[in-house]
Length: 391
Image (cartoon, rainbow, N blue to C red; front, side):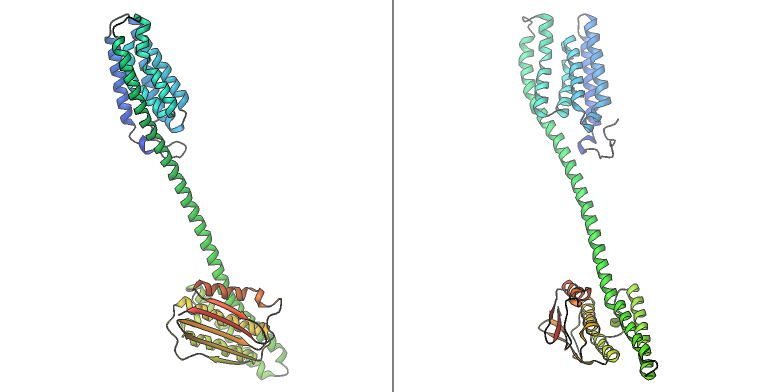
């Protein structure tokens, strides 16, 4: 298997992408070693054995090195390479040139200490081969032994460098995998958070518009049911109010689907929209509603206007459903870079099961926080809801 082919779906380490250059160098070393052994004098049997072992090394290196490095099945591969190298060098000392390939391979496959120990032993094979064949008085040992000592030092240094390159590449690969996994997790959490936020926003929109409109329609129709026989004129008026509320609810639903912007703000200013909410409460319930809004308010972002409009709708809806009030005051004004909405009623206040525990006030508070504002409720003889947002 080529070393640049991914295994088990994992990407190839960067240092393996040009590993074919190593194979070229190894092949040249094996070929030169085989030529050197065949050119050496002496009995043919040991030389042929050495050349055959070198050929086996070439096959093992070409066929299994990349796979061993990638799958970390390196101990068995390294032992096999060293065993065949021992056969080649002991059969003919000239085969020691194969160590220029075997030592880097072992250094890349094993840990630093183990590789240093095994490559040092392998480098001692040529002097050992000469010693076994010619005895301790062989003159070439005077050159081979110091040369082997230098080769051990060089091999340890180079092996350390090879091992560090491999380890850093693998560590970078692991970090990249962790980064990709973290990025995927962040994307998943971001998607879930966005979905949850959108779900909560839509829930607030539906609660503050459609649900309140349907509640108003239901209240008006109940009034019509009790007035049909006793007061047809008032019943007809309530039917007209219910029809108008239904049309506004329908327009709100269509606008919500199209752009999720309150239809009341697309047909007029914030002051006009809030004033219409106060007038509707007075018409539907007969409560005395006093609305104080200046003719001009500072220009506000649409999202801030939505927060104030929904707060006014929710506060007036709570008055309609829970307060049993006779008088309501609504103030909307700008002061000191703040826009303040205050809704006060003289009703019964919040009971233990009142709106303080419901979705409406929580929705108002969440909306205000989204634009950097606050919402407070003060209950007593009068209930006051205050919403302040940056202008």
